[in-house]
Image 1 (tube, one colour):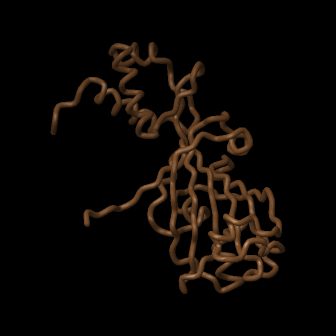
Image 2 (tube, one colour):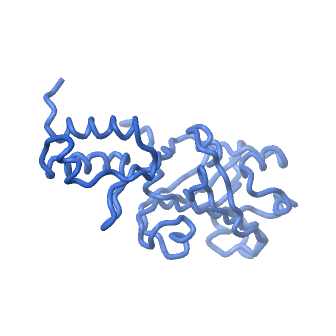
Image 3 (cartoon, helix red, strand yellow):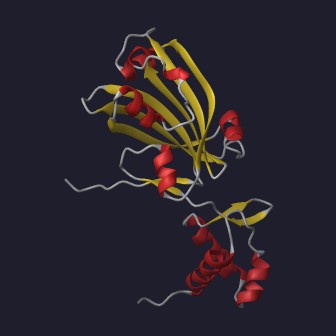
Length: 235
């Protein structure tokens, strides 16, 4: 095993202490106190904390301090629902319905759904929470004629499960585009973070088992709670 530097050794010691004695959102001692406790320089502490922040273990609030981060949800290549992702990681998933309406499709949404502009669609806007904390702000659009009565259903449940159980439509694959953004005021307020906070914008077009387009969706996921992982291969 390669020799560890001082800050790497300290990182492991702080990590062990965080896992054994601290919970998400607990505040760590100051750099000075950590330096005194472990008998190292403040520069070594600073490097160790940076490593833990880079790994998503800690988060810092400028002018306030360093805190234990909420566990990240690592989204892999499988087409799974928000509820399934969180339940698999021990969270209690919950959904708040913000809006559910039937409206004419704007041109760009119509193109994504493969329908004519002006065709009636359902637009469903929801806030997704894990253990009571806001994690994701999402909007989904679906062709209304294909899912009659959908807006009368309980839209705080898993939408994928609802589509399968009520309409026999099972989502099979999706094309997703993920990019980094800074949150505007409305989404930041919904996600309980400061405006301009870094987030992940996920655009998604999903298809059923017959290859037909089912949904056009977009999500804003908190950057401190989400990451996306993919398996890639050299051609």
